[in-house]
Amino acid sequence: MDVHELLETTVTGLGYELVDVERSPRGRVLRVFIDKPEKPRGVDIDDCALVSNQLSRVLTVENVDYDRLEVSSPGIDRPLKKEADFQRFAGSEITVKLRLPVNGRRNFSGVLLGMRDGQVCVQAEMGEMAFELANLDKVRVVPKFDTMKSGEKLV
Image (cartoon, rainbow, N blue to C red; front, side):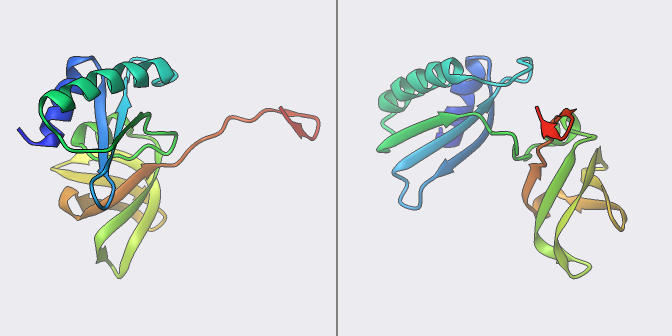
């Protein structure tokens, strides 16, 4: 079993979703990003500590070589990677960076429409666009901040 499968099995077994895994260039730092869709405010420090403790034990037993393990939430600019992500976040504003250019461009932004026929559909400034999953380099949700004005001051 490779490290990604090991992480996926352990994290999902604890009731969380494995969003992303990053390894430092020399593989010494292992970064794991988790989410729990049913928690309205996302994962917190207790969730990260629980997953970190379990992963530390599993990685030791499986003899995975690393120096430091970091477990955190995916953040408010969450990356989208799996088909389920593109369905779940349909209606959200996103940024897209492609591996290979389409119409001479690699960067797009717009509203995610979801998946259709195996492609990610986005309502961009130039109309509806569809991108192959294999051509997606980075896709992130654009954070929305709810602000209320009280006079001229943000609250």
